[in-house]
Amino acid sequence: MLYKKPFSIRVKIVRVKKMTDCQGDREGTDSPMELYERLNLQGDNVRALKTAKADKADLDAAVQLLLKLKVDYKQMTGQDYKAGCPPSENTAVPNNGPAADCADGEDSVDPWNVSTTNAKGVDYDKLIVRFGSSKVEKELVDRIEKVSGQKPHRFLRRGIFFSHRDMNQVLDAYEKHKSFYLYTGRGPSSEAMHVGHLIPFIFTKWLQDVFDIPLVIQLTDDEKYLWKDLTVEECHRFAVENAKDIIACGFDVNKTFIFSDLDYMGASPDFYRNVVKIQKHVTFNQVKGIFGFTDSDCIGKISFPAIQAAPSFSNSFPQIFGGRKDIQCLIPCAIDQDPYFRMTRDVAPRIGYPKPALLHSTFFPALQGAQTKMSASDANSSIFLTDTPKQIKNKINKHAFSGGKDTVEEHRKHGGNADVDVSFMYLTFFLEDDEQLEKIRQDYTSGALLTGELKKILIETLQPMISQHQERRKQVTDETIKQFMTPRPLNFNN
Image: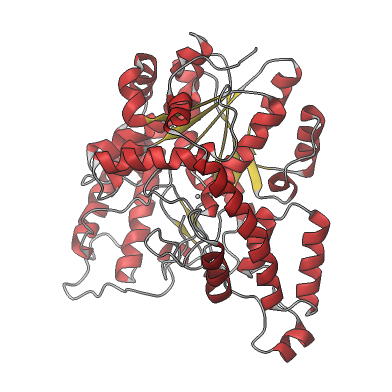
């Protein structure tokens, strides 16, 4: 479920997690005229809502959908939408060039699409302003260190988890000996996960360890069935396979519950009751506005956001928390998942639950750079957890986008650009030593370190890390999976 795509070209970035790792493929692309007619209808809808002085949330959602349709129309036709000026029958549909929604320099981010015209990737400071979240400042990192008594994780130190909602509130409660729980997830669309998928789990494990709290991990196999051309059986099998990689990250079985939606929804009346409560308090207009769903989307997609929202509330897990509904949830996830939880936070007080807090991560780049498509069907777009040491070496040497110069002489003279170099980007995620990382940056920027030498450092970092992960995964038996995925009490003291 918990990181995806940039720009048109349409560039796509690999998502770091998941929450729902869905691609959101739209079925049945509209023609220019069909899109024009939908715009007319949506414009009428907005005007009718204004005239009726409709609820602000419904009106805002309708306006957001109208603006999104206008962006889609310009992208499709190359022209701004104007009422009364339909597109000509021979309007060409452009297949390249910059995305219309990025024409003004703004990035586009939603749970399925991440678009940017910037070679360095998304402008996260602007995204914070647009989403209305808060930046993870040094003061917050220092406070996490003080409250936890542990050195902040490198993802915090380096701004990889860069944005939050209500993290100070979580820490306030924790200092008063009120615990919280963690919730993250994964959308299982294939057997093999890649290194980017590990990011939320690596960080969540650190949070679990330093705060000594329970964790729930949602595997949205139902979502993958709704969005992908896969059978229910395939999606469930992928969920079990992905659970093996998640368990191999080292989570404490006594504090961790991993669940498949296809299994748990039918086994937990309390979970389903929360799904229904959320569904009752979110209108069709709101989900269309928030997620861009259309009238041609299946009803499963439209109702799915409530399923991803439900784990945010503690009484969805009576086996862990009893009937308590007052325990706050902290969700580490990629920033593209935030729309799900903005919706959840809006609903929470109306059904008597605390709002979940969030920590948002940046996106994980494909090997070809922040402006290239990462695809599970393209084995060369990322390093997969099933790759051999030789495959890792070959992929990095052949495909990792370089910020270096064309010749050794030029590079020695002018240096490389670490900000766009994928090998350096990957090291910011996986190299623990801050001083070593900074020295690599300085040496590469000055020209003292060549691109081949930088790639060698990355290869020597990833090969043992992935080999060790593979060894841990081999130790995950069917019995181990059953232990993690059986609803049961967890060690929880509050």
